[in-house]
Amino acid sequence: MAAFVLRRVLLMIPTLWVIATLTFFLMRLAPGGPFLAEKDIPPAAKAQLEKAYGLDRPLGQQYLSFLTHAARLDFGPSYKFPARQVREIIFEAFPVSLELGLWALLFATLIGVPIGVIAAVKQNSGADFAAMAAALAGVSIPNFVLGPALVLGLSLTLFLFPPALWEGPQSRILPVLTLSTAYVAYIARLTRGGMLEVLRQDYIRTARAKGLPERKVVFKHALKLGILPVVSYLGPAMARIVMGSIVVETLFAIPGLGRHLVNGAFNRDYTLVLGVVLFYAAFLMTLNLVVDIAYTRLDPRVELS
Amino acid sequence: MSGAAPAFAPTADAGALASSSRPESLWADAWKRLRRNRAAVCSGIFLLALGLLAVSAPWLPGLANPTAQDLRLGATPPSSAHWFGTDELGRDTLARVIHGGRISLLVGLVGTLVSLVIGVSYGAVAGYRGGRTDEMMMRAVDVLYSLPYIFLVILLLVFFSRSILMLFVALGLVQWLTMARIVRGQVLSLKQQNFVEAARALGAGDGAIIFRHIVPNTLGPVIVYTTLTVPAVILQEAFLSFLGLGVQPPAASWGTLVSDGARLLALFPWLVIFPGLALSLTLFCFNFLGDGLRDALDPQDRREVS
Image (cartoon, rainbow over all chains, first blue to last red; front, side, top):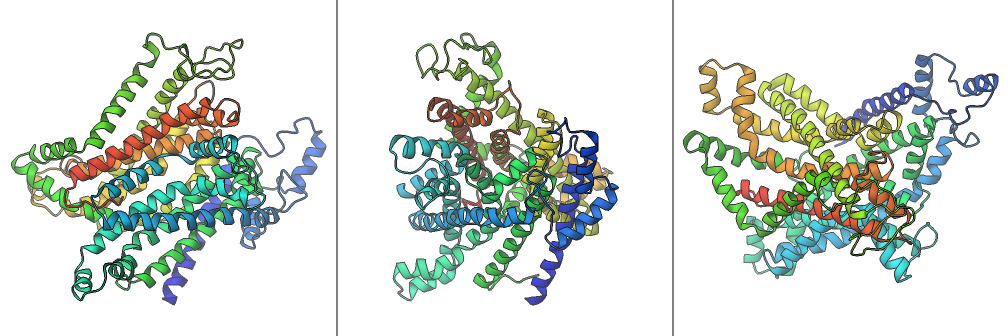
């Protein structure tokens, strides 16, 4: 176990290095620089600026200094907002994104799993078909379509929730709904599939044969294994929720990390984009590791290799 | 998800057996099963109709020019003259949605094709070679899987040209990994079979064996996964267009239309509703069709898990 965790952590380092290298050179190869918007500044001032940011040094040196600083989570000041350190911006914005993502995931699991269990237990009934058709619809509606639709219906017509911003518990509801619907649907489908598989197995027949009430069979015996597809999906789900949160944060003007990424990319804010991408990558890989460990805890048949 | 590859294997065996005795039986059987699935048939018909509409859009009589502005008209709600209303520049929304569909569908199909070509070739070669080559090739896929791709795509599109060609490449590059895994799993089991041995005995080269004998037998799972990749690519293009990184004006995909409409949501809701509906319905139908195809081509594996 310890060896497995250690190996996975060690494997993260070359992967992060690949990502760092790719993003670094991709941005340096790109046409245009961070000070392109201020075209009219005198050449002397421009040289000063480039010097201050180290852009006048050879590319190799810039790369090396970037790597050594990045290892210490130090990405330097933002190009666009020179008064602020990238690390500061990330630490300020990340909790917002994290809160949004966690609510969405929690909501998706709490709603999706019961729907999947019911559909599996009543397989091929009307309820099953309706739940699965609804789930397929949920998967098919993009969040940037659902978001405006919810705003239109619930906040501009019925005035139930604020249409944007991130202030107070009321403002959480629409963004979380928008972000989580697809995952409610997907988790319901996964739970149903997992449960159908498990309910066919011998140990379930044994549990029934010894006279356990059906409720206990389903929730105590079957669900423990039936939920495994959901657990292994949580890793990729987090990655996709990160992607979805870019949309949701843009739609609802939420000051999270996703917005910084998009704005940073448009502003050619090299340091900010590099910092955010590396931070996200490390975060997602850590999550995947946690999910893998949780998986083995739930299913003793799986061995870590 | 990792269970998908071995789970498809029984079909391949059936396919291989069927193709050696009666080549049409598997497909005829699958076709029969598919036809019984009414939701999948309806989805297929809807998608065909949509495809025809999109292809013939420039020559449709009565359809307005999607870029023709009428500033005096401005934004109007749906009416008998403009079924889906007009936008703030007086452009006909119905025409914009149909022409947007041309772009969205084209991107979906070409992006899928790119991923199909790369994924199938890569997976087939890895599975057929086996051993060290296979291990190295699949390890590379594992590493690529762990990259947060969408960030790289965003960077690629921000820093380089935002041409439609770049979009095809970027989207195709994201999608081929799973296809490579599926095909590799298939090939690993197929290459042990007698018909491959027979082909080799007849003097066929590796390339011919892979692409003429093995790849055609992986068609079932590949078709299913392709059907599910198209909506994924359409969705990603729409996502990028929503962020302003997709196709550039005056061309507009469904993603662009939704994004533009969302800005004027409070004033002209129909500008979001119709393109959003078109996009969602299309994705819904592709998913339904993909599910139906999986059930039809893969009778042993009736799990609803993708």
